Amino acid sequence: MIITLTLNPAIDHTVVVDSLVLGDTNRVTQSRTDPGGKGINVSRVIHTLGHESLALGFVAGGLGRFIEHDLKEQGIFEDFIHVPGQTRTNITVIHADSNIRTAINERGPEIASQHVAGLHRRIKKYLRPGNWLVVGGSIPPPIPPSIYADIVLYAKNRKSYVVLDADGEALSQGLTAKPYLVKPNRRELQRLLKRELRTLDDILKGAEEVHDNGIPVVVVSLGEEGAIAISDQGRWRAIPPKVEGASPAGSGDALVAGMVLVLNQGGSLVEGLRLGTAAAAATCLIPGTQLCRRQDVERLFPQVQVYSL
Image 1 (spheres, rainbow, N blue to C red):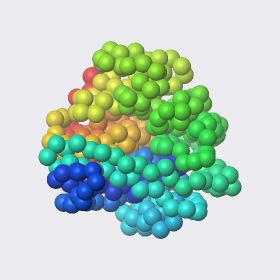
Image 2: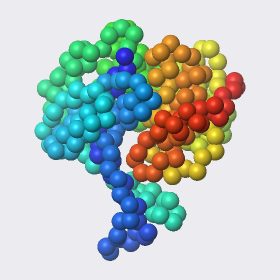
Image 3: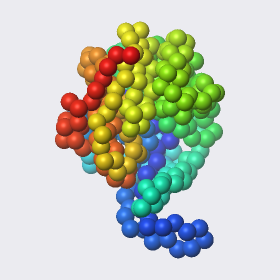
């Protein structure tokens, strides 16, 4: 079973404008709204690929109800905890001609201690030995970033596999608990290591440093350049086929979904990297905050190149 955990879900609202002028009225030519958050996106991609997962986390207010309703309509299992306030909205403004994107992300509702305790009970209810738990995204206030380390330790004690996809303090503190797999992108890895990673060799050395600190599998997403993966079995690079990308939003989450789906079925890291890279490339074909389509993933899958480094 695959369980995804999103502490700070969002309504992802994408708008396209011909021009953006500060202090004036700007007309939207296209718009789209989707449930968002790293774990939720992973569950959406897993469902698209024909498999099941369970989405957990916090939702608040009418926007939280929208997320629940949308996932249920898609056939995605969820069991969110309701908290006071309102689920956040993340707005992405896309300039049509230049494709420049401007993100405006809200902080999210405050989560009381009793709801955090309820979340731990909810995880305990579902998590079983051999399950995969995907933990990712930002942490709502005033929850400390150490919560990811607490969740990782609990899941490991339940003999479950944890995938961590986070940034900043949430990532660095989560790593102290040694999750099974961690998936930063290049910028997140730079912030973690506090140095610039200019070349592929720099990125490899940085990923190996994380691996050598007790993380069994380290995957670094590189956007249109694909991804690299490091484990005790070797080092690999996946190169996606060239696609006419409409939007890279959610491609990192699609990469995680494909990898976890294969690993949960007993497949190899190489095949997981291949499916995840195909899902990420397929996500780039879709505008706005939509994610990949199954037919695109299946078409791109044989075109993904994976080789040993």
